Length: 510
Image (cartoon, rainbow, N blue to C red):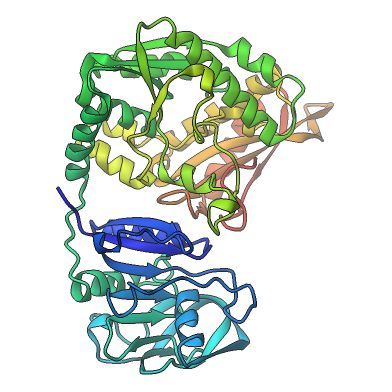
C-alpha cells in the first residue's frame, strides 16, 4: 500500500523529531532528511515541513536549502528558522530581537484562514528564537501575532506556503496539533492512513520478503522494544526466529529469571544466557561512560556471535532499535543534528559476525512501539514497562563498576520500583530508576557514625524520550521510599531526588 508521505527537512533543531511525532499522531507517515540531502523523488511527498534551527539566518554560515521543486510546487510549512529563512531571503527582513523570545506566549491576533481553523486569540504557543521577522517577504500576508512578536505567522499569496515563528510540535503550544492537522489534512489533503494495524501488516510482509526462509537471532531484553520486535518477527517467520536473553549482570534485581518466566506462553523460542562475569570483567576499571557503553556493546556482540554459532545457518541478527536511538547516534557529518551519546545497538555489526541486521522498529518512536504492540494483542503489563537502558545499571553507576556497587544499586532500584507500584504511581511515570553516585557522605545510624553511599532517584514524564519533565512525586512517597532504602540497603545512608528536565539534562546521568 502506498501511503501519502510528509517530508521534514532538518536544520538541526532539537525539536525536529517532535515534528515527526506530531505528524504521526495524525496517522500520517513522515520522514526526516537533512536540509542539504533532499531526496530526489520529491513526487513521493505530498507536503514539506522546514524545521527550526540553532543557526541564525543572518549568519554568514546560515543553512541554505535548495527549495526548487518544493516552494510553490508543494504545500510547505516553515517553522521558526524556516519561517525566518523564507522572509530574509525572499524580500523580507530578519533582525536580532530586542527581547528574548523564548518560552510561552499567547496569540493576540488570529486572522480568518483555513490554516488557523479552530484556533482563537489567547491560544498559547512556544517561542524559541533570538531573531525576529521585522518585515514579511514579498507577497506575505500576516496571519497571527503575539504581544512581542508581530509576525508570528504568515502565508505567501498565490502559494500553499505557510510560516510560523513558534513551535507547534511541543506540548506548550496548546493548539499545535490542530494547526498541523489544518495544514496537512485541510490544506495539503494528506490522507491519514498510517496506523498501527497497517504498520503491522506491511512490516510483516516486508520482513517475509526480506528474510524469506532464513534464520534470525534476536536479543530479548524484557523491554517493550525487543518484545514488540520479537512478536512482529514471530508473525513473519515463526519458528525461524531464535530469541536469546542475555544476563549482562547489570539488570534489575531478579530480572533474568523474571523475564524468562514472562516470555513463557508467548510462543517464542527463548534461550537464557548468563554472561554476567564476562560483562563485569570487561568493565573492570572503566569509569568513562562512553568506554563503558562500548565495552558492553563489544561483549554483547561477542556473546551473540558465540550463541549464533550454536544455531545452524543463521543469517540475520534482529535488533529492537527505535527512532530516538538512531537520531541520537547521528554524527554531525550526516546532517546538522549533533551526537548526544552512542547506543550499543546502533551502527551495524563487525565483519566477523557475518550476519545481516534486521530492525523492524527503527522508524518508530517509543509511544508508537507501544501502540503497535497493543494492536497485536500483547500483554498491557509488558507494554507498560518503563524503558531501561541497553547498558543497564552500568550507566546508572557513576564511575567504575564492581559487583558490590551493582548489588547496592539493584537493591535500591527494587525498593524504588516496588514502592511506585504499591503507591499506584508506576503507570503515571514514563521512566524511573536510581543512580549510584561516586561520593560517600557522613551519616548517623543508631549511635554510630557512618560514611556510606549516596543514591539519586529519577522519575520522568515523557511520551518518546526526546523531551522529559521530572515527576512531582508526593513528599510522603519520597519520605517512605528514602527511609526504606536507607533501612533496607546496606551501604547507603543518603537519598536525593533529581528534579532536572530534558533538555537541558538527559534522562540518564551518563
